[in-house]
Image (cartoon, rainbow, N blue to C red; front, side, top):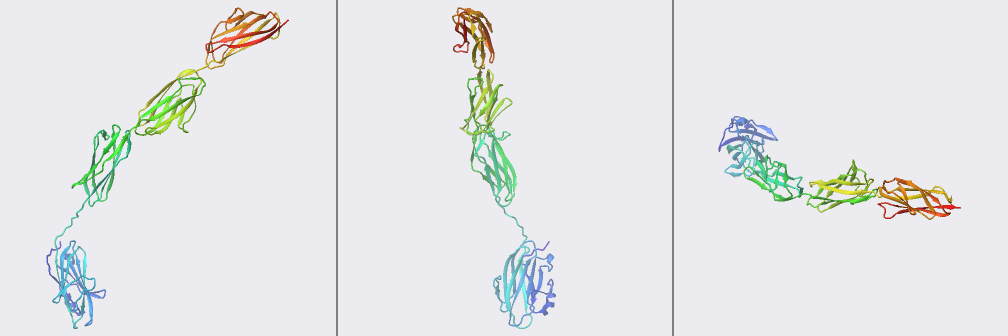
Length: 504
């Protein structure tokens, strides 16, 4: 350990002429003169004379010789050899004739043949250079004598720091209740030194919790170095829609603290409503429209809104007015992807469908959207057929000789999509025609100038009924054979006639 000194008085003696070298070398601790930059330098370490155990190195540089009556400059260097500051350093040196200080050099006080430099503090390892001018006097050796005083206190350095905590709380303006609220904290140390024991806290309003059910956010950040910043996220659950208004604070060791401003998040939820307009009845083969409407009565967007329902067997989707790819019918299910329905908005789809069989059709399905409760869709359509019958009558031979028998064939067809029921055929005979026999799909019997057949209970679509009536043409002339058909589905009889010429 280097010795401590206070107000040490040290001496360094140097001569002007080269022949003084032996004199300086004889001084303990003084290094021999050496040339450097055109000057001769002598050095001495104080207080022991050895650098390894000394505190201050004093070096003097003088010209080797100067002509009498000419000016010259010299330097004195003071170097702190310790790792601590030396204080109150004062150097007193002989002031030769014509002593002055060069421009820019440290000032000195010159009195009674001596110059004094009040150097002050020299930091650890630092060097202070003193410069002076003089005038060479009488030929011979001129001796420069320097005296150094300083204090060598036991010094230590403590860095005084001031950490500064800053906190940002970042939240969205709008959030769906089903998603919760993403809260991000950005905490930083904007000061100097390390901020320790850093903690972020935020009490949650009623109705909002963390996933574990706690109603307070507490984050132990630990330590933050100067300039360090961290981002921390937490997810807050919302029990119901409503405003989420809160703020957070950060604290640290030594009373460090900061707080964010209050910010409000509007927590919303969609409320999806669905309506389907279907015809209560539709004829087989008829193309009819189905209108689906999705409405959002909530205060949050209904994302990924869609509706789906079954397509009963025999029902075909003809077309729709939805966007390309938004409507799909597959595996007996029709699906409509409506996208996002904004609060107060609606989405509408028109479908055109057709069925090929008569039945009571039931359409069932649901409408849904992200964050909204599902809505049930259900409707029934009576898909019915229509009975359409036509009648045809023909004679097998025409003309015929009076007294011959004419044979008439009556054919009834159902060209519709539903069965015709309670079909009754009545044939009218003109004067001069007499019934011989009648039969076919039902029994016939004469009734004055008519032939009435027993009712046929049902005639399926595309099926036929046939009757055969034989009459005798008793008189010559153009005779008309008329038939009329009634059924439950007919508003009035379907009629037909056939003309037959009987001749003499």
